[in-house]
Length: 297
Ligand SMILES: [Zn+2]
Image (cartoon, rainbow, N blue to C red):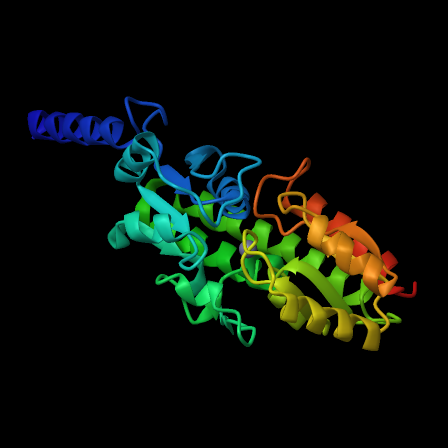
């Protein structure tokens, strides 16, 4: 009996250290998050019980991420991969479905918005039918936190209570953030959000704003027809601010802004690590939105 138990323990430890890459995780489940908001969420929910790493380095635009040998090995050794199908084609291709948590399956997704005549987006053969930028709705991210807590609890039953408790606490802080957005954006002079790329569909949907994205893809150049269309909408809606992103060349947004007599301001789509964390960057976004849209106290 005792010998058998000892052998089992030894086997389990051996498998554990192989999974976490030469003991990097100290026997904890290795959670590989695809990009920043999922890394933040995994760290909040995983706490001291999980070893969380991220595939997309800070400052790297995640949509076109290419996976090197090191990252492929990381995915191979992961206990759980946290990703959103449709954000990063390379990751979609590489994940082992048996140990993957796709956050898009945890929430009600919104349909992808297609600009008429914008052929560039259609060329991506990995395109999904929904908009994958769901982390920009704190209420949906709270639902993802709860789902992730359940997955981690199942993967590491010895620490199940910890995962569930932290998932509940994370969902609660996201719920509080959701309330701040609802109240902060309740009464505004303008509800039109002109953005560099269409990352803010969920935020717009949740808080009754109208997103007008210059491009779908952060790397794509908008067509002259699309630019003229956006300029027309911006003038009609008396837009005072065109939003840019830190990882997208602001030139197109600046040209558009000067054409319609608007300013530019940076709205962070949280596709890469901000200077603070998810919550503080979202609060900074709320402040930016309230100023730009003329929202009352
Ligand atoms: Zn994006």
